[in-house]
Length: 117
Image 1 (cartoon, rainbow, N blue to C red):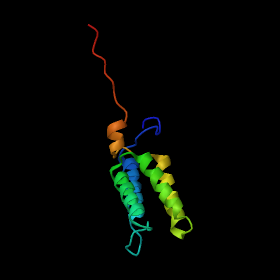
Image 2: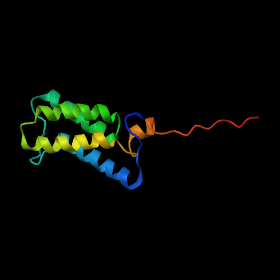
Image 3: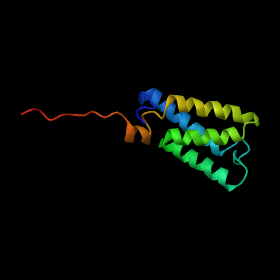
Image 4: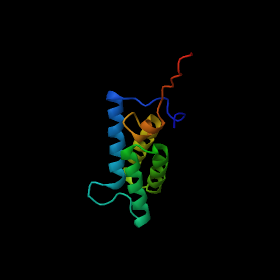
């Protein structure tokens, strides 16, 4: 995960990335009419819910975004699919941010050596 993203920003930028991830998660499972955006049977909807949960937690973000992009590409003729595609690509390029499980599990660590003695 450390090689995919240069850093995990915190404070304002980290909160902005958290809001983008939550927005992408909501877009994957909801539409303005209240029905699921992803249709076509139970499996695509379950996959969309899995993507939404992973994005909301910020866990395995690149995997969740790749699956979300595949689900969105399957819906590309629809007008809203382009906006969803751009949102998911933006989150993919920016990364999960400091307020995510990815940052907690795979973020930068400070290594301390014991003093010589």
